[in-house]
Image 1 (cartoon, rainbow over the protein chains, first blue to last red):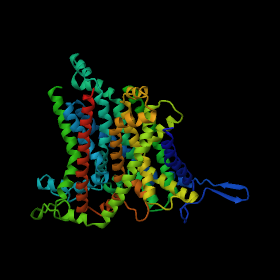
Image 2 (image 1 turned 135 degrees about the horizontal axis):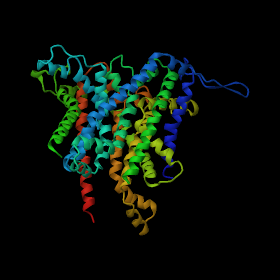
Image 3 (image 1 turned 60 degrees about the horizontal axis):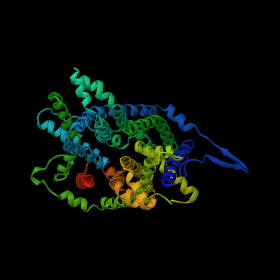
Image 4 (image 1 turned 180 degrees about the vertical axis):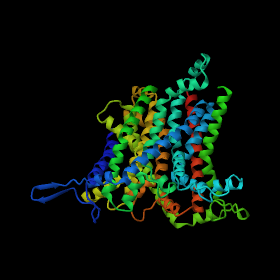
Length: 288
Length: 275
């Protein structure tokens, strides 16, 4: 009985909307309010005509722009996830091995940026990266460079923005996993003659597998559909699928095309979401 | 730990925290800069509170902040109710019809790209308006309902994980002593999971206060939220007032988070001391 209210709410506002998106992805663009044609119509008495229009999908698969945007989004999300792991793993490891008083402070410092607006934090990078921005000014005054580097509106800026914004999402699940680690295993390995790197590679890394996967999914999945960061830092050529969907909807008012993009993006991401759920289930089963 | 390894780990931590905090600190510093060229330090006239006054007299930003505040408070309160119910059902009952679906529906919004959630909710509201005539147009109501849908997922996770460490013997004892289930919930369960509910409320508030994408899809004319105004300003270039806004946000967040953490650490200690 307790579950009834949230269950109905999520059915109505989370599941049913996807059915409607699916429906509209088969409609035609129309100069009307709302700007698409109805799917079903009573053409004559007792005849319900259902018209499924596959043009939107055909359009997405034949126009190179969309295919490239999908591939580029996956590439950007994948590389960002790797970069997050590279920066985040040592941090999560360091926090998990710190003394408990220091650990709480370090953890709080990871959580704090997560609570401040993503938009404002992305905005901060504009001030740092632009031609007369902080980084260029510092480098020029130190005499390291003479002409400002072009950093803003490049793929570099976009990667920095994504890694920066999603880093806490990777560190927190990874930390939760590493915190449960029995460090005596490492000591045992070293006593038996393992070098520290070997011990890390053979013991810590495999045991933290679920933490790595859960954190990576929390970065990868939303990053594929990211809109704000490519829009503000990526420049006009940053082809990301989230941005295409936004432009189709807001600039072109092509609701059916935007819906078809959403459905394809969802189909792409559902396997990863299911994988994430199974990792989570394994993690909590292991904890008990 | 041996020394070489700890030096490596400490430098990684130093690099990571510098990466996380340099952008934030630069916004705080430049919010006191007199120059309109945001990143060029105007030494003779700085530091100054000029942009703080400018922000406090900016009607557009203040109006948007008021709308954001209303949406965030209603959203947080609604999400806490829905999320606590869902978290309680999932955390306490291991077998009921629809558990699998509820679990999937309650965790999917955590990773769902915002553009998809935003678009699907908007199309849903348009279809509802066509069929039942409600909600008429888009605005604060549709935005709040959308925010609740993704915020409750976070509350659910927080409440559920708190219940995982809950000693059910306390509830059983209360029931053995004759308390009815509803009374047990309000007298025993609720106070113990209260810290989780509080964190859930704050989290839901923040998510709503910061949301740009879902609000853009589901808002209507005259209901621009703070992030929407900031986004349109930032697209036109950097503005010193945004640095001020960022500084005020960071200040408020730091105060609240540190305050709540200290309070929770204290109640945890007291609970451990109690027999």
